[in-house]
Length: 99
Image (cartoon, rainbow, N blue to C red; front, side):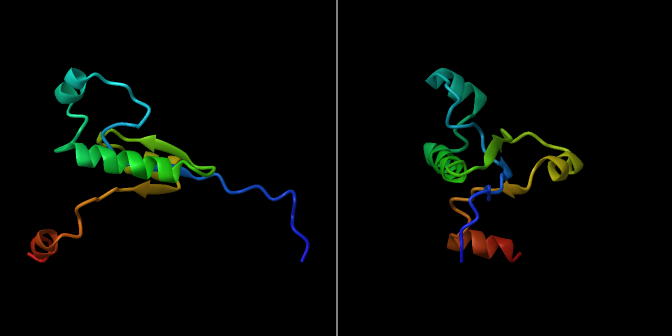
C-alpha cells in the first residue's frame, strides 16, 4: 500500500492541570510564595514529565495553573484535559473513594 505523503498528523490541543509549565522560571522564594510546587516537589516533577511527554508530538499543551475555567470554554478550546495524578492509585485513595 503506498504511503500518503500529504498526510499531516493531527494537531491536538491539550489542557494540563498543573501549577506551572516546565518553561516557567521562578526563584525559590517565588515558587514558595505562589505555591507552584503543590504539596511537594514530586508533584512538580510529575507534571513537568507529563507536559514534556504530551508536547513531544504535534500537540499544543496549555497549563491551567489550577485556575477555575468555564466548562464551555474548555470544551471549545481543547481536545483533551489531562489530570496528572501521581498518587491516585495508592491504597488510601482507593479506600477513601469508596466512602
